[in-house]
Amino acid sequence: MKKIFLLLSILLFCTNVLADKMTKDGFLSNKNGYAKDQKIKDPENKILLIYNHGQSSHDGPSNDCVWKGGMKNMASLVSEKIKEKEVLVYILCTGKLKGDDYKRLWNKKKFKEPYKGKSKLEKRLDANLKLIDDFVNQGFKKNQIFITGRSCGGWMTMMLLARHPDIVAGGISFVPECYGKLTKTYKVKKNGVEEALKKFRKKEGSGPADMRKMQIEEIKKSKNLPVLVFTHPKDPFGGLVSDWTEEVSGVERIVVSEDNKVNGKSCKVWGESIKNYHDIDRATCFKEFNPKILNFIASKIN
Image (cartoon, rainbow, N blue to C red; front, side):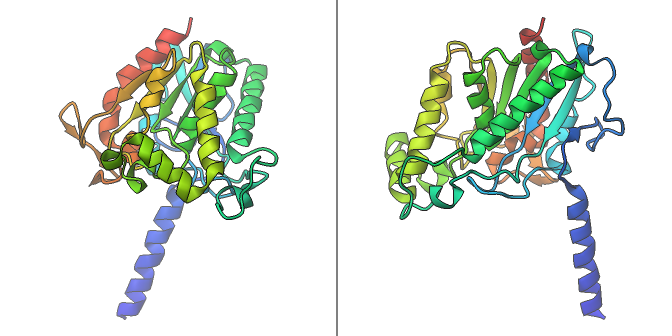
């Protein structure tokens, strides 16, 4: 009897988890699910946020997209009004894309530069460019479209706008980093950024290290990058290796906090105190930044 009860509990848990997974492109509702009506009326009077998820696979294919539990803060922006224009959020799922040379890139014993073909990040960037064109053809205005994303999606957001500064109104980047747990694995707090990145290069090989460096240098060349960036020093990925973003002209960086509180409110994710600060943008306390996000958007549209 106990075994049957345990089996039923596991099935119920798995069912709930799977029900929480969102795996297709689409507009988000303010109730934190897909909007019932995916056909947008009067698109010229809408402000569109294109949301890019993170990725669990560095350069290979995966089933990554988003979870309802992690989209609550983005959903809270849906239907907000800025200059009498309604905010929409569109989820773009690009996890199944894979880099042309993904089998070699993260294997330091085999990887020899240059990278052959396009990486996954580059293909995700291209997917956003195509989507922007599609939305513009539907009647959305470029100066009312924003690219947003977390983790690798946030990193790609900066890459896209560095290359195509006038293609949309701006971007919002949450906890950007796409090269592993640099802060935690290489003990940046103890060793310092420079020494930590040397250890990263030694362990992972020159391929990933050079690719990251090249992308940062490209972003830094921007004359005016209209991006709002959120970081947290305890983020195990980019927490203590994100200071370079402040060197980019036009970027506004916000260090969320030094601990697990924002404006005195504790940060919780899925009902529990936050432990992995790479999830800070998913925490309940992050809603305290909604006014800042909305003001940033307002400052970039006509």
